[in-house]
Image 1 (cartoon, rainbow, N blue to C red):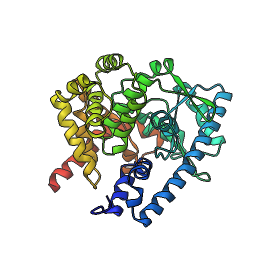
Image 2 (image 1 turned 90 degrees about the horizontal axis):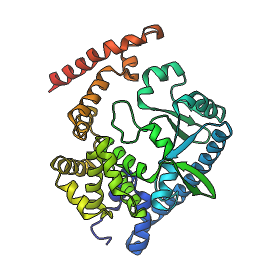
Image 3 (image 1 turned 135 degrees about the horizontal axis):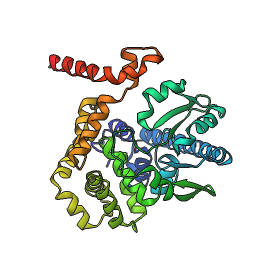
Image 4 (image 1 turned 120 degrees about the vertical axis):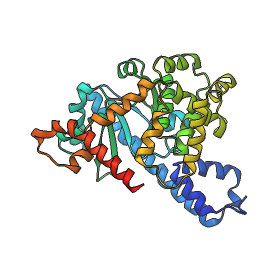
Length: 356
């Protein structure tokens, strides 16, 4: 096993694809004695640090849930410790770097205050600035520098202009709970989580293997999932391509337990098959994908032409932090960024064309 393996490169790839806990578990079971001592020590150091970090994040999540519930704020959590527990059976078996919680938009100001009182600080402290230039993302990032923790506070599951098969109102009605450390934690319903994992991986271009692992391991853990209901919801929300793409990748790369008829359905979809091959190639690249290429590739993941026009319209009309940085204006003039943004984007495209 060890012959011909460049272990340093192997570990770098595992880190880039965020799968080191899975690599450690598999190697321990299959070929630990064949691994060089130096690599064994490196993997054990990582595993110990990752377990400690996972427990710290989980403990903080439970504290935050207590604070929100005591203040009568409806809250749910997804990804992070909850996804690790739901898909991998333990909070330390999946790497994560922040906590993701979601509240109703009407509770956003109260939720921010709770985080600030807890010692968190927003990446962009000015609330008006966040509302003007970041609200399209449907989330704000808060960091606790002393504890080394980050919280992404969501009020939507996707950015503006990005298709999402799970309407927020429907999500709140369908919440389920899981138990971690004896505590009941509200999270996405299983059908919602399957759709979310497929949509999230597709939005990110499936550049990292971890997103395929999430989908595959979730299905392995929940083999009684209602596929008919999920397909129906994906079709009604015009989000079938992301779901079929997740099926193709999870079944071909990780042998996920997906019914053969559904795998055939996905594989026989020409656009989905093309997207899957592109995603596999993307996973092998070291250099990050350019933003413009990422955006253009993402357009092909939408089921309908109308759904592809929405991201374009959003790109042209949504003011962002980069707009402010390119041309700082006083707050009273921020509304004019809606008019200047198309010209700024056109200028960037023209400069790129001239360089080519």
